[in-house]
Structures are given as C-alpha cells and as structure tokens.
Length: 73
Image (tube, rainbow, N blue to C red; front, side, top):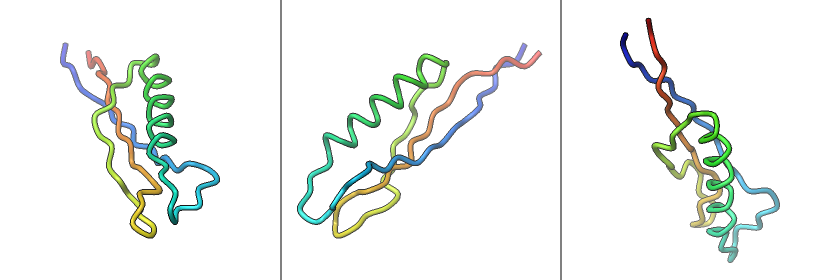
C-alpha cells in the first residue's frame, strides 16, 4: 500500500472591499479560518496561503492550497 497525496487550490476574495485605506486583514483571516475548518472536516490540510492579487498596496485575493492523503492499493 502506497500513500499518495492530492491537492486542491482555491482563490479567496472578500466581498465588498473598497481597498484604498481599508484594512481587510481580519476579514481575510476569518475567510481562511472558515475555509480551512470546512475542508479540514473532509480530510484536507492547509499547506500554503499566497497573496495572488494586490490593489493599491493591499492584498485583495489569496491562493489557498490544501492537501490530503490518498491510499493507493
């Protein structure tokens, strides 16, 4: 029996952001928590969070990647 991994990446963007002067750190953190907890219940483990889009110096989109073990017989 060999252990392999599968991966899933999703893009997170908070709704209703105005960017200029907005600090959306808490909103992004809440989104990461919600998505991580939901996927964690399905066996996915968060392995990376990468800013994928900036606007006026603020991160407005994140690329979030998860992995989980898959048993190959």
